[in-house]
Amino acid sequence: MTLSRAQYESFLVNNVSTISTLESSLRSISWFLPGRFKDAELASEALTTLLNVVSMYHDTLLQRVVKNNPSYRPLIPTTLHTRFTRAWMDKTSIYKWASRTLELIKFTELMIEMGLRRKFSEKMRWRGIILLEVIKAALRILLLKTTRRPLASPTIPERDFDPSTLPPPSSATSSPTLAPTSNVPSRIGTPDHLKNNHIPFEPHPLLLPSSSRSEASAEEYLAAKALTTSSVKPSFSLLRKLSGPRDYLAEIIYILRPLVYVSLLVKDKKSPLPTNRALVVVLIMEFIARNLRRSPSSSALLEKEEYAKRDKDMLWYLLRGSIWETFTRPKLEGFIGWTVQKPLIGLFGSLAQDWIPLIDQYYYYTAM
Image (cartoon, rainbow, N blue to C red; front, side, top):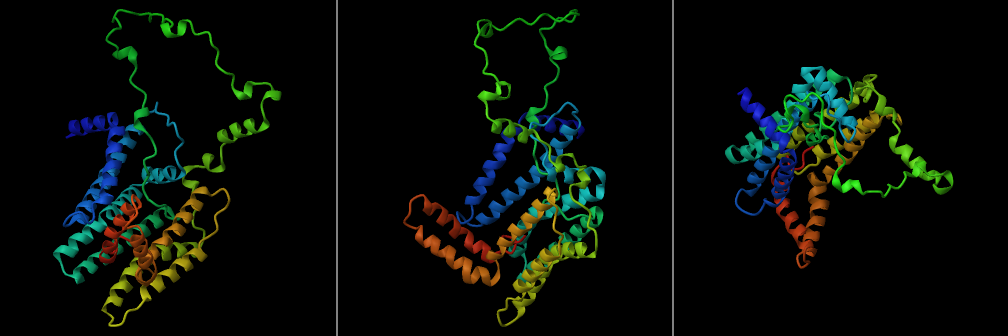
């Protein structure tokens, strides 16, 4: 088992660019599958779920390879989100397994709903959805208790390095042309294509006299090399601890939103009269959490990024409840009708038309 795992790691590192390209291509294909044949949405989601789970496993293996190679130096600095989440995964196993379990549920929840819809009654399907939301809320509260900081999304590090840049093994020990009795390395000669190369390189702008360069060029160069406050902060300090009951209340309200929404949605479906109670309550919770949360300082870049993500996620409410039925869907159907006779643009209209029934039928297509 150990040997096969080592072989797989070696194959992954040596072909990471090809594998990444294949993953991206298959994800693109999955967008066009719904509506093409019977149960195409199930095949599309199964493919997407498989790719997400395999990618998470690949990221774990690649991170282990990089961690065990002290000579590796990334070409691009590690993102603040990756530094923070990786530090917590290395510090405590509770965070590591809770975050991985949470992301695994998010990868598979839509496929689970599709299976429940096909094999069980509507009542059992919604019970399964509520159970998933209970588990997700419990895991998020556990992560909140562990870190005592606002939750980062996603809770696991994202792939932000290229293992193909790993330094190759030393040629002095692996080169077949090096005689084993040689004690002194042979002198490296000048390559033929450089022997007659007498054309000098252009000097760097910063080496030119001040009269021939502008002050802006120096400022632009130094700005790119300058370190920010977040660059030198310890990884655990990238998100400040929650300082009081108000901060904790804001996070707990934010965590409980999906569970409250789906619970009220199930109750509203039993009502003989249509109601927007679930949508109204969850929007109120959104605004309460937004007003209670603290204002990040100018140097708290990761916290500002996280709150910006949460604000953008509110656009998903355009695909929910009465907002979807009375505003978004009529607008989308009008766009589809306009693109019917339009070349190329009609492709996007046809794709949107295939996705409309899925938004109506499945909860997790628009869940957050």
